[in-house]
Image 1 (cartoon, rainbow, N blue to C red):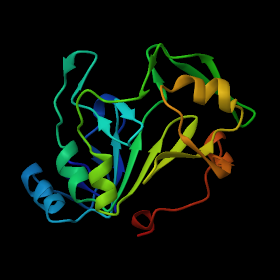
Image 2: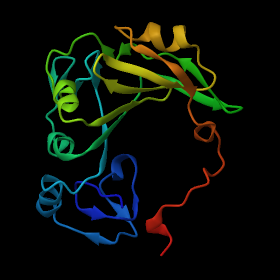
Image 3: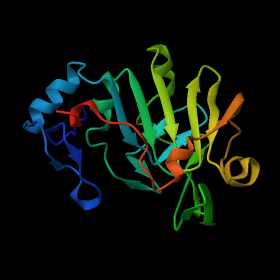
Length: 203
């Protein structure tokens, strides 16, 4: 069952500026109770955004481009989850993409690389995650990475992108490329339904 740090339990999460509110929730908790649940290890998996990622799997969200943004609930949520999925784009700053015929097309590349060699400040530690035996993934619009002892491994790429031009050249370090490199699920790049039902929506 999906939750949001602002208190909703279950239902459908709102997007954009309305994020934090859910439709058809099972329950709504006050935020402190929601975080008590998180602190107690209630999360099996969490989904978080990222500003920057480095070659060691470290993630930065609280300070980048010389500005302090703060961590919000990021640390509380990531500290007790057994599986962590970071979601974001490979580059930032005027990135424009479109999907046509089941393929991802990059119309305008972002000006800023988000996968950098070293972070100046760390919000999430890849080293500690490995010590805890966590399953950590980094999902972008064009590539999927997983964290292992020797760093980030590239395990999936989007249909339509060029591995060298669109991924490797847009990173400040070279990830380990999986010998079993796969295409991301093609259902992600179509307008049709994906063919699965959330258990919460069946009642």
